[in-house]
Length: 57
Image (cartoon, rainbow, N blue to C red; front, side, top):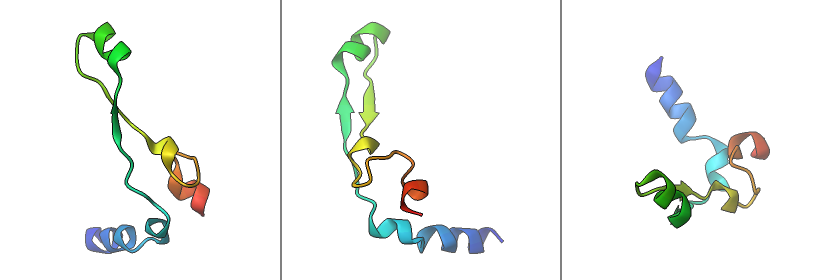
């Protein structure tokens, strides 16, 4: 069962449109929490959504 689920994930059509997005350093937030904070820029996907699978389907 686990193997079947993994195969479905790896062969999903969403990977045809998904792009690797950068991590962006957030200096102001990092200073506030006294730690290095990186934001994953999923808003840079071509469908402009962090819920790429739902937007694509």
